[in-house]
Image 1 (cartoon, helix red, strand yellow):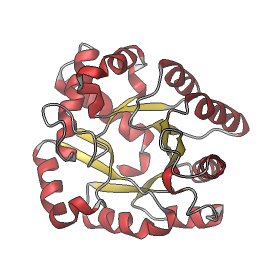
Image 2 (cartoon, one colour):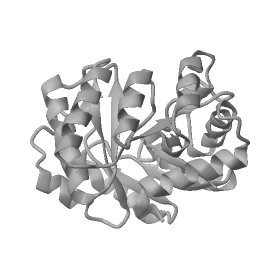
Image 3 (cartoon, one colour):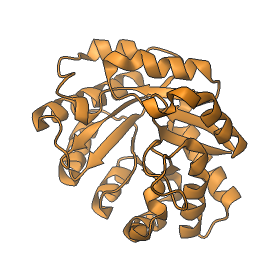
Length: 257
């Protein structure tokens, strides 16, 4: 089994053929998929997808790009949205200093709110971190000192220092199709050095299709190729890396069994 720990099946581009997308994923050997929430107040959309397919689960949260429009979301509201058997994670939330679509203060407040929700529910937090390595690491360490919570750095594109500090407090690191790009050599070096029990793969569909589909719309079936390249960096075959990342997935997303 391969798992896709992060995809956006509620993206409009998938709406007309979501059954076919899920069928292709199954045919490729993908056994579980997590479709990711980007707005708490639209969480019903991802929950509906997760309810429709037995092998699709979801997260609920506010993406940092949308932190400004959902700055008034409260912890009780987030906890209520997460109180559903198909919800296996909180987020995605975090910091994005590349686009700065939302004010950084709103992003930071939202990040800490989602950490509180992860801590209270026991669900893992899916973290978006882009060009904000130092602040993400600092927040994680400060908040972890207040009380443990589980998390994954999704679609990892950051530096080795953030990966090291995240893993040191029990975090996971998930690699997308970028790992297969020629420019992905620095990420492959990080992936080769991380503890095996902290590795995950994802599509981040419909974005970042791995080679040989780079530039096309991504979908969960393609995660098999990202897993293969991750295996190469670890000197593991496809079956071995599939078993490893699947075990890691179920350890982190324990509600997705």
